[in-house]
Length: 616
Image (cartoon, rainbow, N blue to C red; front, side, top):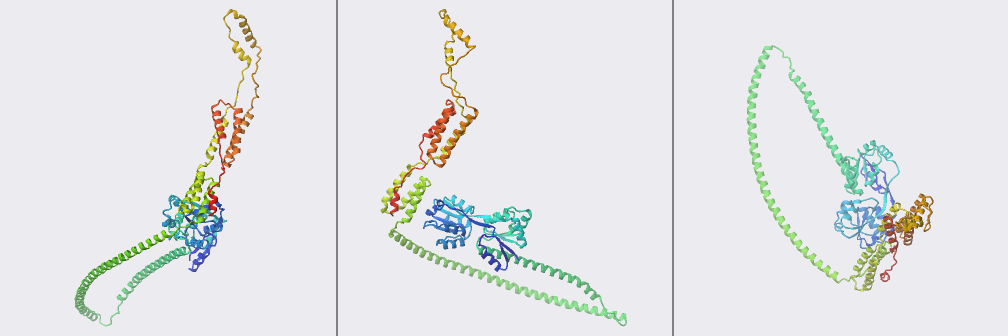
């Protein structure tokens, strides 16, 4: 008898365990994963206000989202991967969800409602890390997809080796797995002995995707059974079907074994009986009386018996041959009659089928024509009714769109996204002539938002970072002051050839001789003390600190701190470094340019349409 291990988390295993036990099997429950809630912000829930479609992956996703009481667009279409998830949606959201026949990711994506989703807003409510195929496929189809992770699966406490020891003690041979995360939980940190034991077990999985994932752990293909669904009925049906096959194969094997045993027994009996029969035939009664007389009598009887046997045998053979010939003639006549009857029946059947098909074709064509006419009339009637219906404005929808546009502009600073939502709101209001005042206000708000520029903090950040990396390469200012004496000597050092200038030449010669022994220099301006290497390093560090502070101010959107930090760095560079250096000159120019550039991280503005929308 098979012993099953159910690994579903929470309280989802009780009904399946009971169903399996009702079929006469033994089942144990051992949840491998715990579900933990994930914090969800209001901005993550905001796409629900404008969602065209909402997809739930599991019952836990439905329960977690319902607990947050979000605002969901009343026209949103709900989808569920499985029937139980759809039932939970009906209970908590009072909505009828669309469920695929094949209750997995592939079946959901095959729905015709999810084929043409270009530019549609779709929200995917799921657990963290689950169902990547759905998100990837919908993105490829052009949907504006927003994912809300509501919970995450965590492996329960304990060691896999301890689990396997317990399961082997319980004589587990069949394991039910409902997710890839459960497979990872079992096959992680395994010993070679544990892996060998698991590969002998039968595994029941809920989808082809899970079956393919299980193959990666070298589980034999014949031990993997796809239930094609996560419901109790789907899993139980596959279990019963598989075990019925096992029973049928077992019965067939036993029949063959019994048949082979009987054949061997019959052969043995024949081999055993043959010597006995030979002994019986060779046994005779010893004749009494004269031996010669008895022998003569036996010879006469033998001859007469042989003649009589030959005559009888010949007559029997002749009669048998005649009987066989008559039987053959009768069989041939019956066969010919049967062939003729089959031919007639085939012709009659073909004619009847042709007539029936012609009649059915006429009936179908008549029904289609009548149906087409009826549908055309109903469609024309519906169109006339729609034309006569006056569409009323839904104030709640207008306010929801306006709130989303305001949130985009003031909180997220996404002005282009806000403009897109305002354009959508304007298209909605254009169908109603009494909303011209609101549309005029929205047009002004759109122009206002288009005029606002988003500060490119990334570009500014990288520019400041590049300058900061160059600071360590700046050359310090090493200005040399020329003395008055050197200047004067340079002017008077030249001797002339004119005799009248002998006094000047003599004085010049004397000054040059005197300068070889004593030199007196006069500085034209005060000279600052020379900087030590430690002081130079400190100055460079201060400049780098101010530039790093400017980078941090950019990320925190602190405009005053940003400009003040740049100005401080500019002062230090101008004071201590060689301004003739190309590197210093270019970097100082960039810093001054950034400091003078006017930026507004948080521009103040108000939307004109806000008070008009509030009055709807």
